[in-house]
Image 1: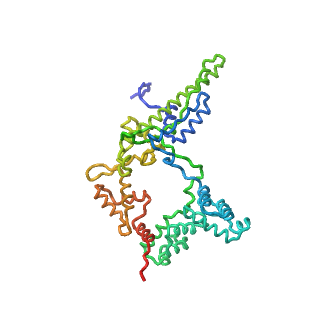
Image 2 (image 1 turned 45 degrees about the horizontal axis):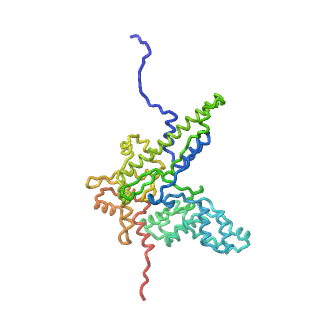
Image 3 (image 1 turned 180 degrees about the vertical axis):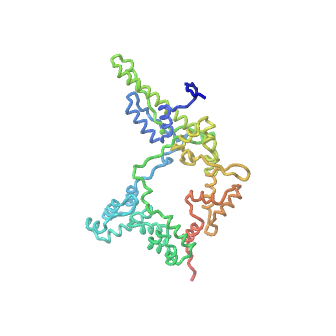
Length: 440
């Protein structure tokens, strides 16, 4: 059989992402801060663009919002310590000592100072420097100004009134803890396996680098993209926040120059390109704002119970459900949910917070996983020293409320909430329980 080749014409369909479409999706995913930087760079590169006056927040008569409602990134470690020095140390010399000690703190909050050298430099006694150091070691968060790991952990235990004799022994033998030499530790602490496990779990719960909770960058305020408030007639008002919308205008003086015959061909081509980019930027900013609003409206429509009652009233919601409602792709909803925030009567929340998986209730109704977490948190906050709930006991209480959930799922949610085990909670309650003195 002879083989031959000949050209064959076939018609196919494919979707190609243009550079403009790719940039539009990037803009949609940007946070407010990233969008501000992007718009500013476009304005600087395009003479036909100028920034429009930014809008103001709605008046308090309609929204009742204040700047305190917006989230703020924590300030730096040095700023935090300086505030406590100003509040707690009055003596001028001692304050100077504290300031010099603060200068030697590393990002983890550890002290790297030669106390004798500081005493000599300020012409004070070493005892004065040590006294100021002890004052600084009482600052929040506990563990700052420690000179080693053991001292850092000790300061935290002292602050929580949890420095028992057994914990003091563990701090003296952190090398054995690191080696996991449980036999030696049990002998030193005179404990059994279960109690040693609790002690080590408590030790692991401490923060070995307390200074890292602070940010070295300047404080930034989280400006919400969407404002949700109840109107006087009881309905919910959902509006875009003008402060979160960078707006641009066309510079008409430059635009009119396109008709200036004195300009060269190259200059006119440059201005036409700038005008096209300016029109494109204005269009994608409008599209981004409308998409953010549309997604937010769908979230609030589905989660109105949350606005009234908080997390316990959250309903299961997936990004696909929102995508279907506004006829967009699920990946687009995911981009919108990234670093977009709404300010509600319950507080400031990222869009992603409202998307929850479903847990089947006894009656057949689906319950949001975040609502179950909220119920678990509430049950644990109501505990007393005589009624600490195990994970299995929490399962039974949820079952009584019509929520069917496995014990391992309860343990998972509890850990995600940062709540320790029932054994550790019981131990902490006993440590903090008021001591009753016997009558004479």
